[in-house]
Amino acid sequence: MNKKQLQSEQTKKRVADAARALFVQKGYKATSIEEIVEATGSSKGNIYYHFKSKEGLFLYLLDEWDREWVQKWEQKEPLYHTTTDKLFGMAEQMALEDLNHPLTKAADEFFNNEEKTNEIEERIAEMVKGHLRFNQHLLQQGIDSGEFKRENVESLAVVLESLWMGLGQMSRSTSLEEALKLYHLAIKVFLYGIAKDSN
Image (cartoon, rainbow, N blue to C red; front, side, top):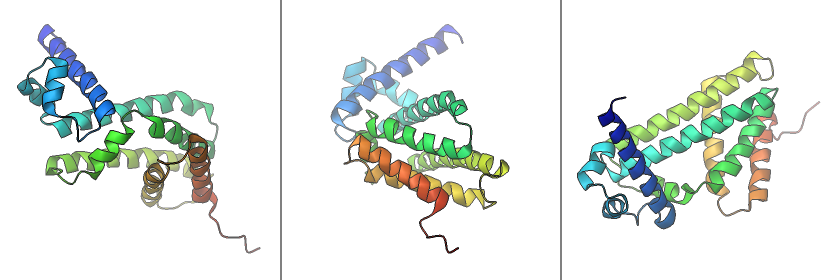
């Protein structure tokens, strides 16, 4: 990386860090590009050069959040010996990390914002595809190891992602202890169902 590229990356990081602090403090809608300019000392043009828009900047922060989440998971994953254990471990990390993340409130505002451009919609769809690939990989491990029945792994991944998304919304107003119980129960239901054994 040459000096110009290094300076550009440093500027990008400085803008992202300052914007994150503002989004955490004020929320997504109440934070303006002008405030980000003021907080960073960068020009509006410089911010648009790196991120294209306020939405693009926020998506960059969401991508960072995703990367951090995956890094934490990759450190913990070897502690779990079965895919079933991994699913319960994921549920715990979802409850602990996502519900307590400083950007959670701003992310809720962002996703509920009706003024999304096609480019933003496409980037959100890419993020969801990444989550689905992650779920598929994990579920395929369980199928390959003989823990899970041979089902359509793409469909199972969608069901699991829907579970995570729904739990994320429904757990917002509960205590962390209650959220952990809900996430744990959700994985039990996903794995074992609720129908009584007919035997």
